[in-house]
Length: 420
Image (tube, rainbow, N blue to C red; front, side, top):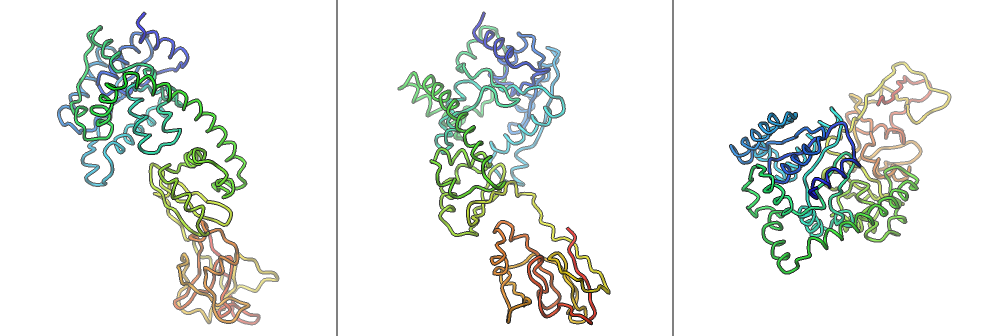
């Protein structure tokens, strides 16, 4: 039995599924894998994204795959997008945006139909990924490369070289589509594939085998590291918070894994280290697939992820006219004399420089100082609300009321609360 067929038989016996969706470009790698899956009589469906980047050639890839599916009696799932138009309107990196489109489509199909998604990455792809992640400072996770099994994603061809796939395709007279843009060295991966790695391989013939061994070792170590860091995170007393002493006790590799588990791009490691030495209230904003920020608190970092669509809601004022003063006051309600309010009552978020004349002191006090005295964590301060009229701040909600407008016994009275 051919090594590739034997690998597929053994691999998929260990990873059964009701159906397998093969991410298929029409190129040699995915067409070899399609042939192998069909040869093993596995329940196969093809998934293809047409980015429209090569005009008629891109449409030709899709037509080729549709014909292949009709010939072999398998379902075809296609998605067509105009990626050039999207990038011209929104900007971004072509390869990153293409990857987002691709994997979003994969996830939609899996969520709807179930099964596993099969990818045709091979050993040469793994080596390219290793060097790209090395250059980007990807840490042990990056140097571990692609996993053969990652959730519902399967990569059964990782043990095999590109040349082995070519030999198999020629032996069986398979047909595929050539993407001539792969020969261009515009992108980093293509430069590695077409220029750098061939030169390295000529001088070091065992390069791919050695990198493959390294990635396997890194994967084993990464699994242990991830487990240990996850255990440490579970011991942190507050959710979304990294205690500063725990962070400083980690070595650089452990810090990288900690950031990864908090969805923080590892390229921000040096900035996070600076944040650890900074004063409380300092903020680090980070970008990536899940943009967010870290706020330096007194004893650690507070982490907020996926802030792209975050919209703070200021809440709604609830005003009760002709109220009576209570026996006991609570922080969530205030009682004002309507005769000294200057204009319309409004609720807004506080701003730097805001001041109030609170009960119990002479003069005024900065809202920022009131929040500091109340030990409000810095990551919560941006959501602090104030009640204002046309002239001044009447209430730092939950913390301080202006002595100028507070109702006294025998005076007209309104009760003000905030409905979230």
